[in-house]
Image (cartoon, rainbow, N blue to C red):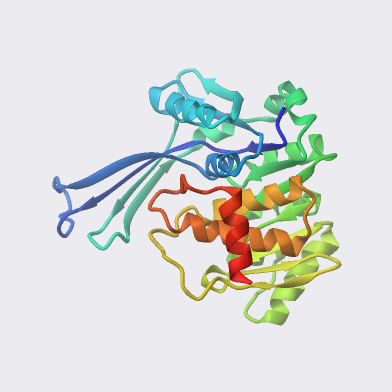
Length: 307
């Protein structure tokens, strides 16, 4: 039985960059890599690697790429019995073309398959949720799914990762149903309807979420760390002065996995925020979206070092 259940997307990430300047409307020699991604999937992998019993509720297409992503999670010990294959559909794919400096030139996303994930999937998987101490909802979910999931699972500690400012509005009406949320500054502005430019405005936004019913708020501040607040505690966790950064991609997903770990183990908000910061640090030390070396012992060790 799972202690943590993730409801969200599984993507196939295809990324390429040219060896020289991009030439439009022509074939460009370069490097292309394919990896498994998706916010929900990344959180699930991180949580499994730090030793939690994890299950995932998702959908994939009827193709080898999706089946490979599902098998990869299963190999990590994740319960994928609720990852449903949709006949006649392709798996979600995110395609990015970078310039020679590895900055984004063009991105294309085909993630409509996530719309196939409905409340019926939650009801069919009811027994999987019985032992779950925490349930995460990926911000890629449609608004209807967020509404239904928060109703059906109202007795569970729910965690929400908005994913992007463009999608954060989907949860605005239901934000008070979540035990814990982890928006960045822009996502927090969308969810609260407030402009956040000062520390006082940051605190006001956090108070807005608490007044709505959220228990723990974590607002990530990019290179400035994270601000956390609940009714008893608040504060900032700043990143270490020196961090080895190979890629910032996936740092937020590692943070979310650490939050779920803390929720499942009944930790205090400041302890959870510190674990999240340490997990993000480990994530950034790998070119991959998930650092395969991440583990709870290293996370806890870095927390003590960062104090």
